[in-house]
Amino acid sequence: MDGGGGGRREVVAGELERLRAERQELDIRIRLLESELEAGSAAPASPAGEDAAAGVEDGLCGGGSGGACQTRREFVESGALPADMIYRYSRHLLLPDFGVEGQRKLSRSSVLVVGAGGLGSPVALYLAACGVGVLGIVDGDDVELNNLHRQIIHKEAYVGRSKVKSAADACRAINSSIKLVEHHHTLKPSNALEIVRKYDIVVDATDNLPTRYMISDCCVLLNKPLISGAALGLEGQLTVYHHNGSPCYRCLFPNPPPVAACQRCSDSGVLGVVPGVIGCLQALEAIKVATDVGEPLCGRMLLFDALSARIRIVKIRGSSPVCTICGEKSVFTQEEFQKFDYEKFTESPMSDKSTPSLSLLPDSARVTCTEYKRMIDKGEPHLLLDVRPAHHFQITSLPQSLNIPLSVLEEKLPLLEISLKETMDTSAASDEQPSLYVVCRRGNDSQSAVQLLREKGFPSAKDIVGGLQSWAQDVDPDFPAY
Ligand SMILES: [Zn+2]
Image (cartoon, rainbow, N blue to C red; front, side, top):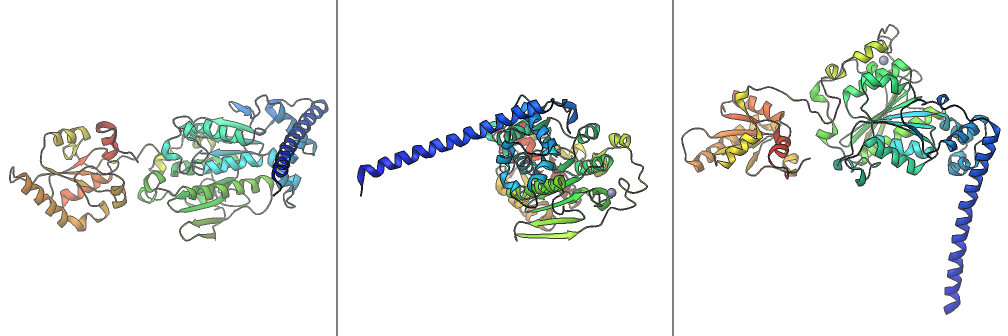
């Protein structure tokens, strides 16, 4: 072809492209500096206490100095958007239904995201990217490796460090022009009022029942709209509580469901992308509420089924006049809220870490993991029954254990009997029934199993306290945790 000439042209074209990109970047920086200069001479800097989340601990303007944030706010208040905002959010501004007005409202709004996990990740990333004025993130946990498949805001480098710090750093990296507020603690009745009152909108991105009730009650007391999402397994749901006549959580569920009906993703699993889908929709609802654009999901609930790729929207009841929290005759006060025991009310823990620990058996029907280990080392004949579901058993198990899930234990007792007999035959030590030990993941199901077995004629059945989790902690640190 045209040999060297073509190569030269490519080099020049590449160089031109690079220079143009550089010029564009310089233009943006020049416009930003010009707008800061103009704003600086137009109005005095407003005191920090005037903005929505002022006074919150370590509230930071992403840029570091705080100057750029103030500049933007002044522009926003004067009605025009500064040049850098026009460039950054140009695709929003081009939307006829959103436009400058929508962006301005967004930049004046403050949103609190409770939970920097699977739901909170996309919520915080999108709200930061889209330019909410103040974004608060509250979470008391640290990043763990088994979070990363769904909590996409965190990186491996942050494992072992605070989730809030990790999430805030990720948001700052996307948009240094918004104000990020880090709340490094678990939201509790004792601190919730103080934190929530500083924000316009609350996003519930948590995964447990007591916190769900607490956040809803708090939002009613402080009259804040609540964007509520949940994701478990392969399903998710979403609604907006306490906004435009929509109910609060207690209107729908005055009494908590029984403990057995409450599953958490640490127990039941969750496909990583499912909270991602619901979290994105929560961010969208928060934007709609903040900007008065569109119809927020009030009085309706969105149900997402990942397996069938179906989204249904069902109508839910309006706010209940007899609701003990938001009803006309409610006498629930902020003082009562601060003293309310949400864990007792729902009979479930607020933290993902603590598991409700049952105590169904006398001490004589239980052994610790270390006692069980000593018995193995002595070579005592016994049968180890693992009552976890079969798909748990496939993840990992102790050697030579027999898997009969608790749900089918009663009907499979004959199988257990045969196995026990085989153990007795091979041991040939005595005629006594060999010991029967029962294990599960955390030591709750195994107790129910031992109770059942003792009733059904297996008096030697004993529970291994704390299950495989304790085995990994106390006996074998290499045993895989899940
Ligand atoms: Zn209510």
